[in-house]
Length: 67
Image (cartoon, rainbow, N blue to C red; front, side, top):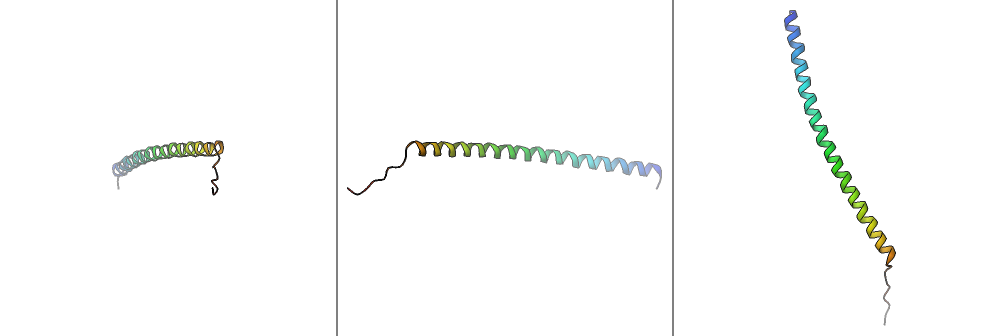
């Protein structure tokens, strides 16, 4: 194998690696978006839970006895 062949192989390897890195970067961006959306959902759920708990503490349930 000559020097030219070795250089060509090295260049094609770098090009393939670059393509893989770009795909991986896109995947990471997509996953980061999903994580951020999940964080937003958790925040909304926590807020709803806190509101529900605060309401239940303010107005305790009335126990209705027999008349």
